[in-house]
Image (cartoon, rainbow, N blue to C red; front, top):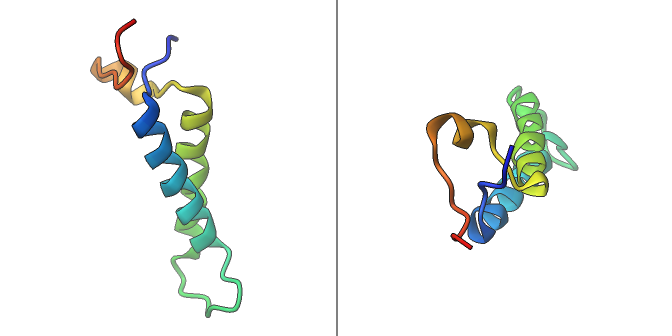
Length: 67
């Protein structure tokens, strides 16, 4: 699978992933019942690190600049 996640897309995925993970760890905050949803943040982090998104591949989308 080739790279299909560009620079800005990677940055946004990292921010989203870290935000969701931070939401899953309620440091000093009350448990809301939705904290488990924050564990989904691992997915955007992994796709940002790999530079490839399986859903983009299926849909034929690429945010990488053409070389």
